[in-house]
Amino acid sequence: MDSPTTLADWIALFSQAELPVLKSSARALHRLYSDESALNARAVAGVVTDDPLMTVKLLRYMQQRKHAQQQVELIDVKQTLLMMGMDTFFRDVPARPIVEDMLRGHTEALVHLLHTVRRAQRSAHYAFDWALRLHDLHAEEVQASALLTHSAEMLMWCFNPAPMLEIRRRQQADPGLRSADAQKQVLGFTGVELQRQLTIEWRLPALLLDLFDPAEARSSRVRNVMLAVSLARHSAAGWDDAALPDDYLAIGDLLHMDPDRVRALVMHTADAH
Image (cartoon, rainbow, N blue to C red; front, side, top):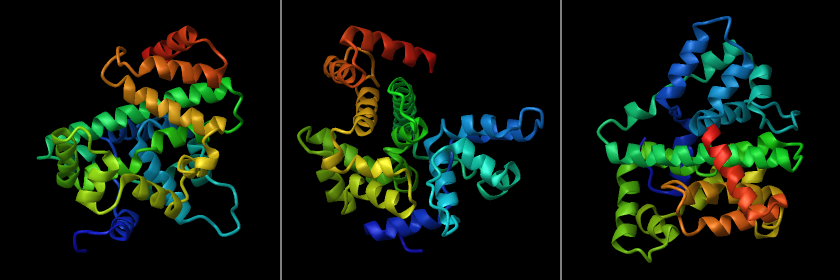
C-alpha cells in the first residue's frame, strides 16, 4: 500500500493494520497467560483498560465482527472479554506489534507518544472516579471515552512519526499557530477530523462523538470527559500550572464541591495511580 496522503487513506490503513500495544501491556498479558491461576477476564481487562492502544485494538476487533442483530455497544472491556472468551482474545487480538519496536530510531516521537498515553491514563482515572461520584450508570463508557480521546493522535505517532514531529516543530517556531492549523498544513486534515472519523468507522463509544457536538457541551458526561482531559493536560508537567485553579472551579461545579476539596480529591486520585 502506498503511503497514505488523505484522511480516507489513513482510515483505510488503520482499519487494516495490526494496531500496536505498549510493551508493558504485552509483558503483563504474557504473565497472565502463563499463569492459569491468575488468568481471568477481570485481570486481563485491568491490563487492557490501562493501555489506550490495546483498548482501541480490542473495540475495533469486536465492532468489526459484531452481529447485525447485536444492538448493544460494547464499551465495558470486562464484559467484552467474557463474551469473546480468553482463548479468542489471545488468539485474535495479539499483544503485538510493540509500540517501542515500531518507533525504534524515533526516540523523540516515542517520548511524545508515551506522554500522550500517560495523559490518557490519568484522564480515564479522573473521569471514572467522577462518574462514580455522579452515580453514572455507564461509568465504563465515560472511562473508555476519556482513555480514547486522543487515540487517533497516538496512532499517528506510531505510524507517521516524522510529520507529527514537523507539526510540533512548526508550533514551537510559532507559538500562536493553532494545533488544527498546523495539522492541516502538514497532514491535509486535522486530528479532530481523524478522531471523529475513526470513532464513526469503528463504532467507538458514542460519547466520543458527543465531544464534537456543541449541543452536548453542557451534558455532565461530556463535561466530565472534557474536564478530565483538560486536568490531565494542565497537570502533566506538575501541579503549578496557571490553568489548574480554573479546572478546579469547573470540576467543583460538575461535582458540587468547593475548589479546595476538588484539589485534594484530584491529588489523591493522582497519587493512587
